[in-house]
Amino acid sequence: MTTASRILVLNERDPQHPRAGGAEIHVEEIFGRLAARGHHVLWYASGFREAERRVRHRGIEIERGGGLPAYYASVPARLRRARREGQLDVVVECLNKIPFYAPLYAGRPVLALCHHLFGSAAFRQVAWPIAAAVLLSELGLARAYRDSLFVTISESSRDDLVRRGIPAEHIRVSHPGIVAPTLCPDPERSRPCRLAYVGRLEAYKGIDVLLRAAAMLVPRFPELEVFVIGRGREASRLEQLARELGLAERVRFTGYIEDGARDALLAETRACAFPSEKEGWGLSVIEANALATPVVASDAPGLRDSIRHGETGLLVAPRDVQGFAAALARLLVEDAGTLRMRRAALEWSRHFDWERAADEMEAAIGLALAQERR
Image (tube, rainbow, N blue to C red; front, side, top):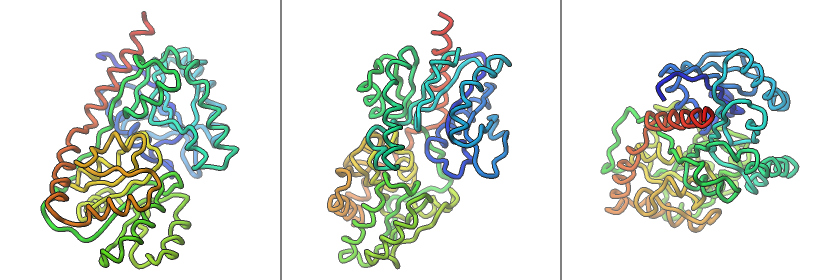
């Protein structure tokens, strides 16, 4: 795409939202680069306490539309105003919370950026009435988006879309990139007997599986320590579980830490664990790999796409505590196989670049605009 476009991004949270996560990192990294290339990017998000109405971040104009009910209700009117004021060539709708159904009212091409859809997994994340509403909200996707192009971040999410009735020829897979760490990890050097988790502390992330597996490993690895890096609604419950399992002196809940400190910690970690039941992709997996740290994760959508089983990490059946304990034990032992996996993880991480991801998004936007012109 050679000409600058006016892009309106619909995503519930922006990068400064207190509950921003991997989806927001993905959108920020790609559209910050597109803004630097001369595209006008307006990101319409929900508000949060003490949030400014308008801010500029990495060249992206962020506009916030109030709390969640008011925000979702305001989206059609905001798109109409964008058209009227000449702010809009294409809408990029992020499908990772509740669908906006923008093709029904946008009046412009809609490119759907699908991180993942919840499906029945919503019932393990929120109260059942909300989960039921989320599930119902996804039922009309195939009809409403039948003429839209999709960009999705993993093969698992592509397959999920196809099962829901989206034509495979309408879907492009574009893996996220990572920001390469500034330090140079040494895969050969011995590391402390440490495990780590990085990400939001939410129920569907399965962090309790890591804690239960760690408790099983203590007799064999008496020096074991566990770092839980991140924040979220499950923090108090997980801290209580660690105490009940006798891990209070071994598990450190760090909350949010800056990238440099996180990277230094992971570069001295023998394995990361990601027991989530579903992800759009494993961004934290690749970030750990970039520090020569292999990963044990659930054999679940998204995670199975970001891990080469037996090479860069190990996949275990979801919620299988004994399976996680056995796989983590394999990586806690620093033998030739473990060192080989560290080297492979580091090499695998070098395939993931944000500039390439931005190129692919720019090409998809160009294709959506070309189809509209035809």
